[in-house]
Image (cartoon, rainbow, N blue to C red; front, side, top):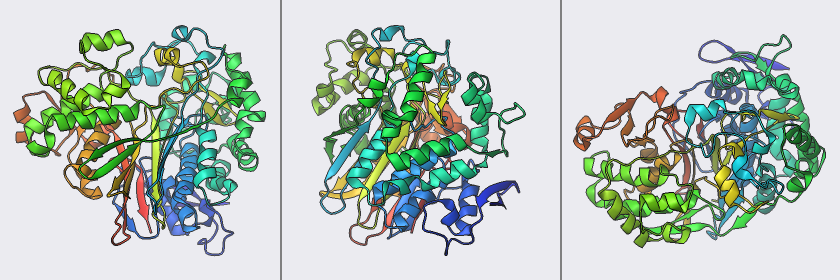
Length: 594
């Protein structure tokens, strides 16, 4: 049974009717929450710009970039004695259900950072894509070769559907591994909210409706997928419809009871392989059974009395971020003042971010053509000497040309009462279900290999691809201070600026979240290649922008979604125990604390 509560427009939104939650059986599911909380968070979920004030408290805190309803799921895990990891995992499961598996998936990828509140010990978990053992010619995988930055074109999909574009997703194995090491609640309890949301359903949000409309032709290709996203009258679900996912609920029941083996060696695994091979894929049951997530030492950088700990190997995003921070130091941005007040700093920031967050090289030959004689190996890129040499080249290079790259994801961070922090990012790593739009018992199987052929070719068969995700922990004087995670096409830009705001300019989290931002300098159709300045209208003083001499693109907040990075963070004040959580201003994410 459900009650219809109203959002700001008067539209009915389904919320379970279980009283005020006070006498309900203990559960993380929405049916156990106070009715006022259910109503509030459904309204947030359906509002593209609900307003995202900082969350404050001492008991626990959670923040999400999208799907604000899931933040309340994570909060409930903390309220019921769960750890920070329990909170981010239960929230991530709910995020996927709420998104219909479009841009995040139970067969996608996951990255997680955790820090112990007492010891300050940091752990890093990579559950990225594994390549397929039987794929012996990756460069011939159908799709648009190395087209990660092709924006709307990649969102719509290119070429004929092919099962060869599927890679082995690590999300569920990673979730299970994280819980085994850092969880407190029983494993099955993490799934309670996600299962209820899938079983009872919810009203289709504007965002999900837009995704379905954009991809309705591909979603109708396979009968099982069509059964999920089309109604009995053969029309796709639209905004305001009641959307249930019973097949997914059944799958989640099995995983909750049997563990991740259900997806990697059990019944779901067999169906997944059958579906992929039916489209010409080469994945086998052996590929799934062999999958293991990777615990590794974090990548670290010391800066201004802080230790920034980033996702460990195999990683790509962490190397990019270290190099970018070192470049900003070599550029002297701190000494020249914040980029919101200094045109010189703004120009230097733009070059530093574009060089690392925008330039993409598929071979050593391409790297050397751009920077002849400069060592661009992984180890070199982590050094400050390399950054100084690279900046010397960039300082004289105008304009910079770049090929942007980005994926769809979601993020969640949490801190528990003991000061343990967790930061998670998960992704389908392709845009909107993938061109194949394969759905197996409610779980979407994307096509990430359709644009990463060269990377697949460079990775040993059956090995894990370097993870592009940027997620991390900041320690101050050896103690956990801040946990953060980022997503979106402009994630590298936003993460670099956010860390500089905290470490170099001493901002608190609210100041960091609200500081003027430089967005990814690219148009939604990915046609822009020259360096411009893309900003949110009104954030920067006009005299600062004019003094750069560059072309300026001013976006309204609602139009910034294709150019912004989404950054969430939590912080704990060691002196007072006060917790602060922030989520992006221009999304339906939410920061919550108690």
